[in-house]
Image (cartoon, rainbow, N blue to C red; front, side, top):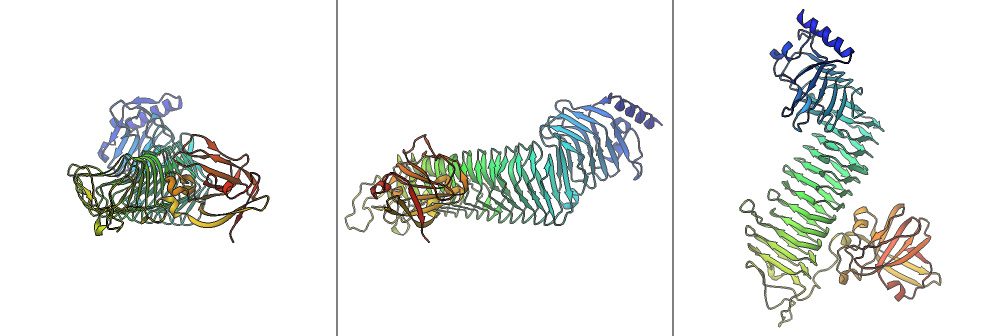
Length: 621
């Protein structure tokens, strides 16, 4: 009778808008379902659940939860409660942990950081709750598909937007959902297309297979933009904006063969996080303004990061703990560190990438890696093996065919390094070529590196200087190259661009044939001529092509020779030309949107005798 009386009192107060006030509720076993802990009715039998209803709970500073129910087996209902003040980032307004058959309905969470957390639980029902939070509205945590088996209805809202929670779907498309939270659990072969989540919880894919997320727009989410948990084969594609996530734009955990392609990840704590997941491919993505562009950790195997650009990320790519990761044909500018390979990483490959205007180009503590074909320009230190104070011992790395230009230090190798081979690199216009405090090989097989300031002689004419190059710390290159003729091709992204012959024709029929590099992918258009020494760039021309007309403007930051630029529209119409000054802050564009732009060293068009009027672009068959 006592419980019934309290129930009617609480109900009456709720109807009048005068919910009963009390402190936080903590129920940590079945024996804690008592009146003192907020239970107003029910016996805990299957048809008569315990009822906790009508309470107004203000969470005091220093406490984590408003309502905490943990380690129970009896059915219960939390109904019509209001929780406020749950501001501890480790807590939540309502926590259900290791429970079975509970229900949360008609509750309000406000002035709190996190709303409802359900962890390691089964068959929980959540409906008609209003969650106004500054953090995560609804979070389900589990280590098996069964722990995601809940009945969470669309009648719940997070910051005014509905919750969409799906369990056990097979096939089909979820199209155009606008939500505060989307979860797809224990499902197969489902496509989520055109979803939008703003200031909510983002999208979670858990214990599913063959899921595709296409064209999502995710901004200002309070955890991850997209969280992929134990869901192999998930594809995330064409999501042009995944931005301002409090954690990762995309987080991949224990999910093999995930593909992330053609996505834009901006101003997240981490753009893409890969943890304990094998054979993940990240292709043709844009990363800008993140603390870390891509983070690979947890012993992930064979992660591939290819053909992407990174702009103004504090760290472009971090390979913290990985086996056989690959970074190839990436363009990275304006970062403290372009690529970091940590001491728990083995067999990394960083190739054909451009790193411009960075603190460190390559920061290497890994072992048995290959670093070749990269362009590093305007770095504080081009390639560094930092001091580790006996916490890592980088060894067995190959550093070859890289160009380090206009940097303060070319290379630095710390005391713990040994057996790393550095050869066939161009160290060009650096204030100091290198320092080596370890025990490394600078001229294996009698082939060292080329130094722009080397003044030694070559008495026998074998192309190798007679005088070794000595470095601070004790390292020595015994076989420096006399010239850079051995270095064929162009390092960095430009060297990976496809080539073809085009012709530019003026109104009088005069013709200039040009061998061009084709920049038809975003990372290629992003980098252009940036970072190339003028001596290499003077023989390069780049044809920028766009899939649709764009009003973009070109810049010359980190470009060190004057260029002519010519614009054409979608039907081949001539839209003008200009001469661009090296390393200037000016912007150069056309009067109308264009689809093609040709950049080439200034003066080549005039030197071919072409007039100042309109120019026609003719491509080879």
